[in-house]
Structures are given as C-alpha cells and as structure tokens.
Length: 146
Image (cartoon, rainbow, N blue to C red; front, side):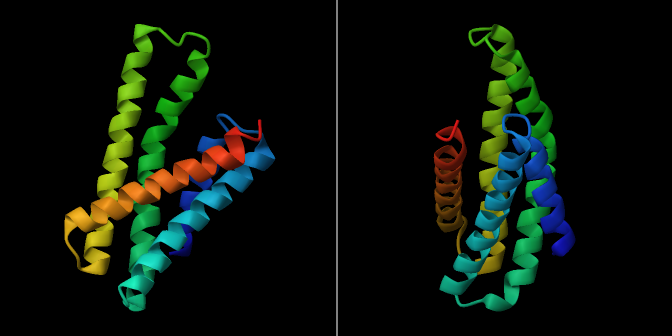
C-alpha cells in the first residue's frame, strides 16, 4: 500500500508540475492522495468493512497511478498547445482526456464495487461524486489561487 500511495503521489506531482509551480504541485499531490485515501476510508466506514482498507487503498492508488501515467502525455500536449484553442489538432487530446476521465470513474467504481460488495450503479454514483468533488477542490485551491 505504501509503495502504491508513493507512486500515486509521485505521478500526481508530475502531472501537477505541468501547470503549477513546484510547491503548489507538491501540495496538489498531497491533496489528491489525501482525497483518494479519504474516499476509501469513508466508503469502507459507511459499509462497515474496515478490514478491506489495505486492499482498497492499494487498488485505488495502483490503478490511479497507471491512469495518471497515461494522462501525463495528454495533459502535457494540451498545456503545450497554449494559445491554439480552436485548433483541430486539440480535438484528439481533449477527447482522449475525456475518455480517460470516464475510464477512471469506471475503474474506481469497479474497485469500490468489490470492496463494498454493492452494485455497480451505486459505486458509479460514488465515483462520479468523488471525481466532481476532487475537481472542485483542485479548482478552488489551485486555479483560483493563480
């Protein structure tokens, strides 16, 4: 679990460095990792299955690390495009990023489905809410601070 959380934090830090200064990128990675662990703790606490913490956090962090690895070049491509907002070339990374976010939601839902032993629609809803709040918190903390 520690190795996966470290990898997840490192990948989150590298992704954050694309848009943020180093100190904010470090804080962003810390917040991202904390939100992921909080999702697991709260979900398992509500379902009264704390014995699955190690497996759930390891799975969420490991899968998240792989998805961040795939997202890194896409986000780098989008950030390096800069002022060319209407370029048809940006169509590809924008759709790729959207598909990756949807894939991430489904992966989180699948992991939570097994961890909580509930149906996929319930965990899909939890995953969408998690993603929404994670993006909102990131926007409040880092985009508004610029």
